[in-house]
Length: 65
Image 1 (tube, rainbow, N blue to C red):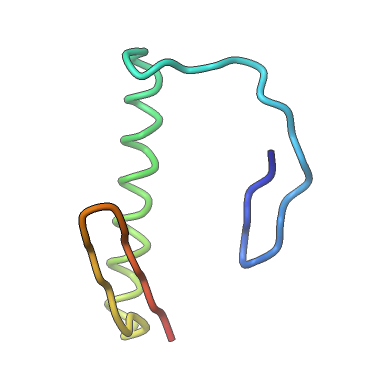
Image 2: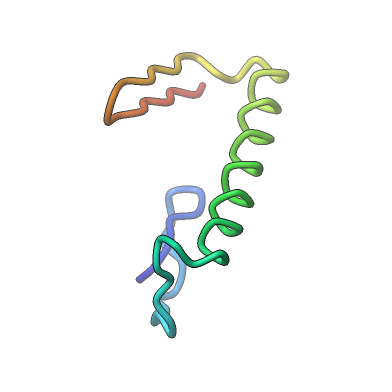
């Protein structure tokens, strides 16, 4: 597994443990990610870099300048 950071993949890493949906840690990690995403989107909006945001049933399109 690797993650894209600024369109460049990180070094690959191996999952050590699986989180299940009902695991309290999974919910905590989800909330951390959502909070950070909200911060990034708010900062992007403040800097007027957000061009378009479409939210549909199973799809989110985010277009930034």
